[in-house]
Amino acid sequence: MPTGPSALPSIASLPARVGETVTLEGWLYNKRDSGKIRFLVFRDGSGYVQGVVVKKEVPEEVWAASGAVTQESTVRVTGVVRSDPRQPGVVELGVTDLSVLSLCHDWPITPKEHGVDFLMSQRHLWLRSARQVAVLKVRSEVESAIHDFYYSRGYTRVDSPILTPAACEGTSNLFETQYTEDEKAYLSQSGQLYLEPAAAALGKVYCFGPTFRAEKSKTRRHLREFWMVEPEVAFLEIDGLMDLAEEFVKELTGRILDRRREELKRLERDPAVLEATCAKPFPRIDYRDAIEILKGKGFPVSFGDDLGGDEETALTEGFDTPVMVTRYPISIKAFYMQPDPKDPEVVLGLDMLAPEGYGEIIGGSQRIHDHDLLLSRIEQHQLPLEAFQWYLDVRKYGTFPHSGFGMGLERFTAWMCGVPHLRECIPYPRMLYRIYP
RNA sequence: UCCGCAGUAGCUCAAUGGUAGAGCAUUCGGCUGUUAACCGAAGGGUUGUAGGUUCGAGUCCUACCUGCGGAGCCA
Image (cartoon, rainbow, N blue to C red; front, side, top):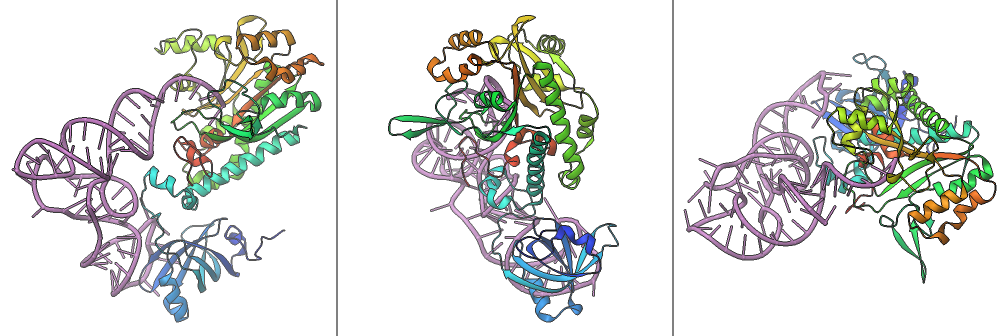
């Protein structure tokens, strides 16, 4: 079992050490003082443990240190691990020695409520709070599960570039940067176009990295910098893509339920919906049927309209799993999506909507594999042909049907955690008018 | 960009146009089983900025700044 940089045991390991005397290093999370007995809650990143300091049982200087120590001071503490008779399965530390390594003054984040503006300005410190720690652990678990999912199925990870010469879709929401003296570059909005040639090389590929959208979005479901995982699979068509998306979401959700129960509990996340997601098939609804359902619910929508947040929430009502909507009108979707041969007004696209109002977590499609059809779509969208010549080459040299999707890591994490706003689901959120810290 | 809401102590919020207040945090005191511990005391303010109305403005009006929520777009 490898140890960290310090050979000291972690708080997380204490339940297996009942009866032992251990020394820990960490921070003071909270303190309750009751005359001749003090309760100090320590944290070290792996967990939390309550230390009990009794005046007549410790040397005078240890008692003094336990009184002087403040929230977020760094400490080295020694004590006996014992089960807490009031909470079975939980341990506490009978403190025998305590030294303050660094006394913390004026810690700004108190145990009471704070406003969003204040917390966001203190994001680097806010990260230490129990709720943020839990969310970041879930996020990390999701990231790890993503790699495990694809690796175990024979996918090759292909890192797509972050600096790109032109837009994938439109140019109004790109971050621009100077590449050379007379050439611009743009931060990537998607790795998809680069994955398609890679799928011709490796068959099954995926990329996972940061994505940048300079949209003027100011909602809880948008970030300007977010992480997206994108699989792209050769010879996979729309029905197989839907199977892949469902299997993917089921596996990630199951992984969180298996390994992050503690964090879900701390976040007061009811696991019922996540358990249903693992157990039940996801409904698959054609866009045309979705429009009829929405009309029945009183929405003034007709064929050709895109679905807004309220419509998405209405469609998922009554389901405790994600819902997949397919076959959107060709007019509202990207140029590269494959038209349905049986219904040329729609494309073989797929959106997966999370339940409970969390909205779109996956968007994907079968791609156009016919060279001339793709060429005509590029022309219809008035995209610069020379910029897409390499993309057309995928169809020119041994073309093949293929499909892929993108899943937003923060949106998925937000849904897992039951956290309403994406800003808590990434360590340092980048939002409109906010790039500090 | 558009629509709506807000800005008062370090933080979260009160205050009919008439003496600027509470809780938490901080400091001091009390308490041997606390769980956002509790009890007592103290310090802490140019009410976002600039102008205006009024005998009198935190409160009403105008402009600006900052933030929040939502829309469009999307993951």
